[in-house]
Length: 86
Image (tube, rainbow, N blue to C red; front, side):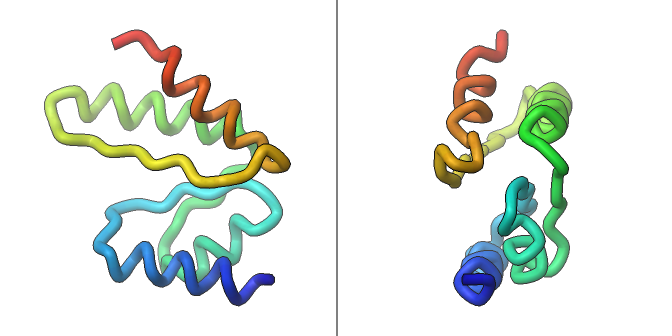
């Protein structure tokens, strides 16, 4: 299973994704494949970082894609982002 996550991280890098933030059991594999992804210990820390990123990027074309399963509670990250005040 680790191989598919590493390959997906590599693919994200090839697609010129600027940053990869990961959380969960497979986070290290995603990060390793991306070569310099950031691993967070939990969704709360990830949400804090995303809020900071959004704050400093207010005047730019920031795109955030959330990928994950409910078993890793990534739906909570999506809900958090939807509820952020502009």
